[in-house]
Image 1 (spheres, rainbow, N blue to C red):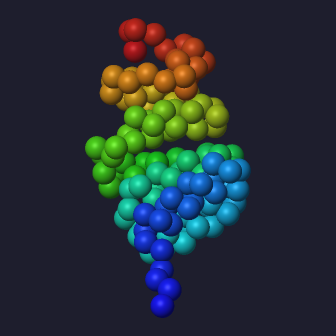
Image 2: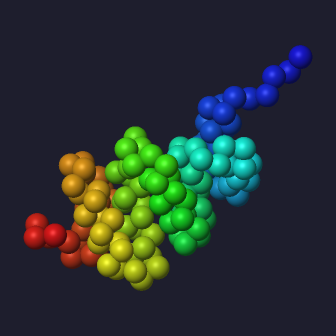
Length: 127
């Protein structure tokens, strides 16, 4: 008897699809997972990343905010704030981009994306 893959196995499969450039297939799997686990912050985060990768920033933003709403201490909250900043920047919403970049900076981590966004948004110590 064949068993259905677990939630974790399906999430891992979606991550692998996205990393291999099969973003539409990853999106399809993540949407199916989301329909089953609508209040799962990890699935929402991955759905946001995948939508972002497909250039669907407005849709990604909704998922990122929902993930934070469900779990404001989400283990990937630093990345979520950075991705929100990047998505808002790409949509020309610079105030929202700066607000989310500020939240990421206050978490005390650093990344190349953060450095790039700080330069683009002219974000300094006084922010």
